[in-house]
Length: 211
Image (cartoon, rainbow, N blue to C red):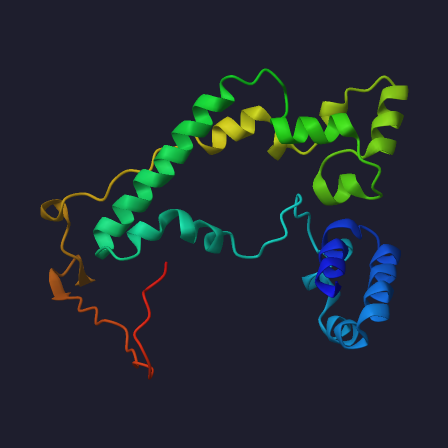
């Protein structure tokens, strides 16, 4: 139960008063959990106290979410692993480019749905970059275009721009330039030796490497 209330605190408490109310709800269920939460700076876990807009994304580790999708690359040698990741990324980029060409709206579909539903949440605009129900009502009463008051990151144009780039493959080893250090004017160069990082094997079964 406490875990459910913590999730609601993260997602729904968009004001400081709302965050306090959620903590009190948690305290009724588990005083220890509420005590633990209060010891952690609110800016690290409460939507109402985030220092900058998070646009509805509450994870601090986007790369961790990619691990299951590129797990097959983790066991490959370095260059093959990078090429596998590059191909997967380019597949995603291409799929998103093609799907976005079918969109006729100004905002991406998820943002359009959010604006259309106009959820009644205080401070939604500041936290998510999308107008809440009250803002939509005010803008419409003033005969303003709601789309002009949404963050540019939600526009279809910027979505297409995000996936417009190409990730080039690593050149063949025969094309690599030998890296040396020294004074170019004097012609005095010495080879740069890069040693592998020092590592200490921990006791127990060897774990599979993760990205």
